Image (cartoon, chains in turn red, orange):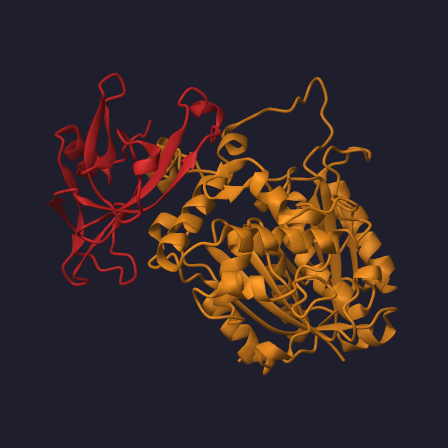
Length: 130
Length: 401
């Protein structure tokens, strides 16, 4: 389970409310992910948190039939995915609620918020938009 | 800009890889000493002539690694460097050592990569599996982006991310799994002409590759390296020592390197790898064309790494790599000799020393010591290193004169 840091807390707090909030650099004119203190590339000190819809396309994926580490031994087959948000940045995630033969790179996907109250964490997974 | 080509690889040593260690267990430090001695013997140089070292991370020290090594070997180093670039580390170490020689800092530099991680244990000092072992190249330390945004989703290790790269490649450019399999098949042919290769005497076919288990869709098991125990070292020296050396000197004529990200999720354009810059710089520095190299040794942790490196290094157009490997004979006797000792796929990947396999593949050919797998009249080699998930890449141009 991820453990938020003082810097990344706004992202995780938003997920807990089933919203997605990432950073935007006005001088760069770009959204960025993951959270940083300064904009990557320019190191501009103008990052601000903005809410995005979370909708995106499936950039790539792989079906992982072998556990990636013992911690995942009980997870079975995972669809390890990278989603590109409509705002630009890419996000590492898992694709859920989909038959493997229905997965297509480039397909539209939407957020699935997975709450883990015992860990105080909400994870962001994705499923087909349909 | 760059090297003048006045530092040369003068000797090498590469242990035959072993799947399970049959040799005596030794620590990385002991391996450092013995591998180095073997490379110096090969060059015909004395240890007392060495005044520089370049090392990867080792098991016995988390910090102060270079001084730990110089003390252990008794080297008064003017240049003691550690490189932490994974599979790019070996090629990266070569140009750093060459630069130290050309700057006049050193007469001879040892570049030694211990690749046997099966080290001695004791009841009082047992082997402990920690986060580092489980998560490999991904850091699970608090505050690490990987701990927070990658590991929780299972995005770690190598198979998954390389599978993702291959999947995206197929989406953008099309995918020919027989062409991908041919990379492994041709390299196996080369291994069958290389007695030290772990898969010597075990030829395979395209059908064998496609019938092997799908590990990370679309990559099959035989398109993925098998971790082994081994290790390798080279010695790099100046022109004066080159004149004394037993071997044909292999001059380091050009290099390039780019390190733009750690996790491929954050690549600006995953389909155009850092190799584009690395190779361009290497060829420009050496002042030669792609067509002027006699063999290539391309870092081959996965078939997709080879394919994209061939494209991005400029041997074929982007998107035409599958056609290129189908149309060319990649064996040592072919029209485009590549990974002539089997590559890591068929020679074996000795941990962090895996990158050294490609350096030594080029050196062995230029020195004319590749035996049955020798490429006729081989004078120039293009060598690549690749670390992380195609996220740290280095290119070298080696030349015999």
